[in-house]
Image (tube, rainbow, N blue to C red; front, side):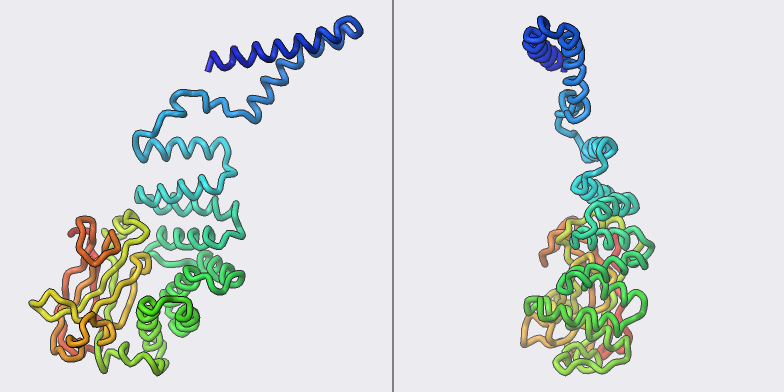
Length: 335
């Protein structure tokens, strides 16, 4: 730092000398003024638009921990808060540190700086839900999602989250209307999963099922399953990677092979689905052929079907078929 300032001072003085040499004979007062002002102006401009802190060895030292990196980012944003990417990075770091309220506030700063960036706005709406009791979307989050869909009707995440918010508010018919346009935007497997969710919402709204959704009718071929989060598991869920998935499985008691399975993003929890014969991995093993099933749910941190050390799981529940009432599974933090 001192060496750099010395070099800068010498260069400034050299430049000043050249200017003064040409002025001192004809305009000695001007020469004197230039000799004083030029170094001051150079120093002032550097302090104004330069980055003196970058010369500090501590500033270029690699962070030793997440907390160290966050502290540096906080200091940088305090000096210059007009950095939406920095606020986003800070918010995501807070989420990884299980600080959902701070994550909401930091991502909110980014959203305020980027009001027309749909992805940032949707992330802010999700952050508000993550910080709320029961992970509920509040009125402001719903308004954000509606504004995004008004600008970009095919925004998948905004439409998905708005449907969740509508179901949370008990407006199941609205959720059906919100989710249905997504079916044409998704691949066949994902669309089948969403169609089951739509049929659950139809049933809750008291509307008849769609003609192609017979597999989602619990009375004829399956059962409804509601997957909830134990309060102790909510913070663990925030710490999982973005690609984490929740697997809901039905199998014959004593047999590890599933007869029906669905996969959903872990961010969609809590959720309610309908398992049916159409969810079976083997056409010869049908859920409707069983009189009793064991039902379980597992959040996979890797997103794969194989169980991993960081996964979260709900205790299995054995239920007799057919079952009119939904099976309630609660994801817990302990493995």
